[in-house]
Amino acid sequence: MRAYLLTGYGAVADNVRLAEIADPRAGAGEVVIDIHAASLNPIDFKLVHGALKRISKYKLPRPIGFDASGVVTSVGPGASKFKPGDAVYVRASRDSIGTFAEQIGIDEKLVAPKPATVSHRLEPQRKTLEVATKRHKRHIKKSKNAFKAVRL
Image (tube, rainbow, N blue to C red; front, side):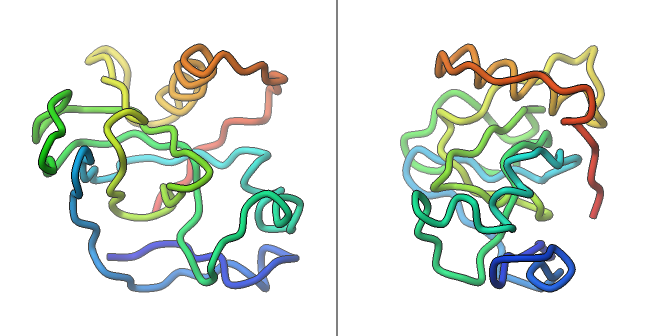
């Protein structure tokens, strides 16, 4: 599958590349999701520019991206909240980033159902962040320009 990989820190043009990587497999408690849309947020730029190096010890190269929406394609052992065909939002944790890809394998605890009345385009990313924020009781600053859709 194709995914955007972080290869180093600094300018995006010099440190992010599109590459072929292995398809994910659902591990225990995980689901694999075909990603239909992913959002580009301020944290993604901070990650690429190296602002998170001290708190996130990533082995490079690695896929990047925190938010997405898509459809569940497979479910690992012990995962019970979703089934193949379910439309969902994803808010990856710092350890499970990788939504700038065609698929992601991720803990089902980081996934929420997408309402049928909402498209996979831009709105899911806004809702994903809202759900994650409420769930983890974190406070974030809202920005009009924080949510932009990215398509592979």
